[in-house]
Length: 197
Image 1 (cartoon, helix red, strand yellow):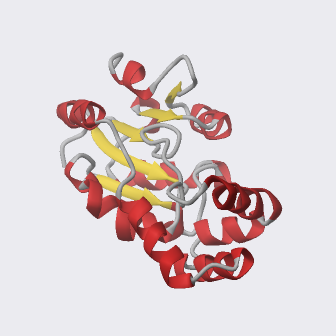
Image 2 (cartoon, one colour; image 1 turned 135 degrees about the horizontal axis):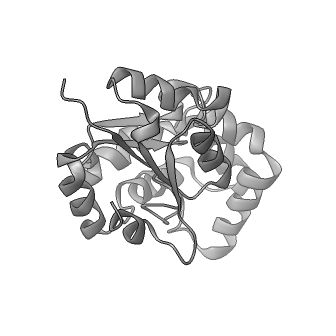
Image 3 (tube, helix red, strand yellow; image 1 turned 90 degrees about the vertical axis):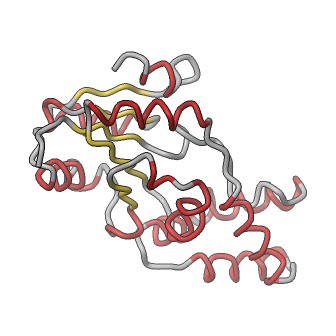
């Protein structure tokens, strides 16, 4: 295998800013955000670590919101399949494959693999897609064990690799491993960072 550095790129908050259930009316959407991502973070983490399925979460939410489970599921799946990523960003990542192995690495749910990845054809732009749901581990767990795992798999030292991510915690972990980090903020977009490579 040719030796190249790795370009690790995050998804949520880096390449994409769309949300699950965003097509719901605002009152119901806000109830979900509060219930799932503030009051029941344990359930959300279990979902992201492969301990709960999207079906289970949607059933819990349908009961909580008192809405028909089938219609909630249909909307959820549709929102997963229609998440928006700037095509120019994906083209830029694709063009960097001459210099880097490209790995999309995300703390995400089963629906990302099942609906978002195929709908957006993300496999066209990345050599590997790493999802916490499948790995049962977050990016920052065990001092960045996932990054080390894939660096070893590609026989590529982390010291020559790059991470583009919107999480300060994850960037700190990667930086401690010796890699170069580009933190996505309101002022520094993924596109701006990619143009530096």
